[in-house]
Image 1 (cartoon, one colour):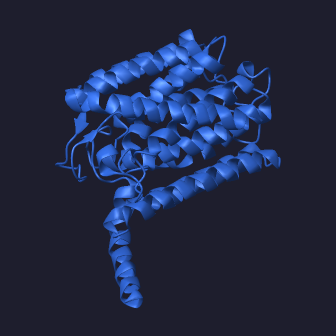
Image 2 (image 1 turned 30 degrees about the vertical axis):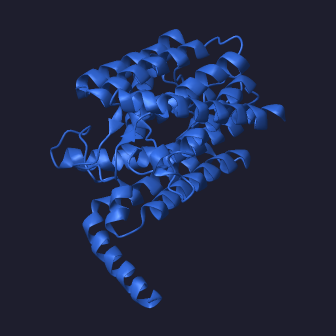
Amino acid sequence: MFEYFWIPAFAFAACVIAILLVRPIAVAADLVDRPGGRKRHEGVIPLVGGIGITLALALMSAAFVRPLGIYAALLGGILLLVIVGMMDDLRGVSPMIRLAVQFFAAILMTSWGGVYLTSLGDLLGHREIALADWSIPLTLLAALAVINAMNMSDGLDGLAGGLAFFMFAWFAVIAGDIGNLMAQRICLIFCGAILGFLLFNLPHRLRHNRLRVFLGDAGSLTLGYGIVWFAVQLSQGQYNGGKSVPPVVLLWVAGFLLIDLLAVVARRVVSGRNPLSADRTHLHHILLRMNSRPGLTVAFILASNVVMGLIGVMGWRAGVPESVLFLAFLVLTAVHLCIMHNAARFLRRGRRWFARGSKLLH
């Protein structure tokens, strides 16, 4: 029981202290986000959330994770991504360089850490899908997809951090179920550190604007890397003493992140644009254009992802066949793609609904 409370509590405190110490340094070094263009916040906001999370993770790992073993590769990849993220936040880095660094970090995961997909589970209800020679290529592709999906989700206060918190919380639950206590410990550290960041990022009245911070690319890349690491590790038996959770369950845990990425990339490709380019076509952008308040939008998306994780984990515990869970996930994805394809129509209807609701309230 010590681990379930004290480890995340220490990580929370370490992240809060780190942010308070690093924040004035970031302001002096101009590591800040200024409003303009797609950025509609007010004031100059330091981009130190990811730095605080990383410092807390490193400190707590040194205290509670010994020996590091394969997790040395996790920290090495995170350090690499934090560096390139800070460079991007400070002066800007070309998309190709960012992608190359992400690719190298993914190689550290597969080659140094030895963490990669060997099986996709029994997705079709016939037999286990072994990847053989495709193991490392598909793992690298998955890593790039998840890292960039987390980066793209960082558009509202509390959204990226909240999504990551609940995913790591589900990872901790799953790790405990399959008996991987070391993985569970690190996931709890992530949870505590993310909560420390959210103290300065969630939109609430108790937060003083002068202490507000953003996650920054260093943070979103770091969280994406941690998410893909544990999604792969916990779904492959060789890393957990022969026990594992079916990979399809991790699809549900990271559900919103992956589905929204697929929808946005599909829209960009169809329109002939770079799939990694920035725009305002994510679900949270659509909801905002329907006159939904930012706090309500974040709460809706986070609640949706919690429910998706609950469906996946409870379905696995109840013995629901992997093929059924996979089919249900595909149906949900198809519904989301259909809605996003007709986003303009839903925007018009949504604005009328919100207008009618406002009249009724007044």
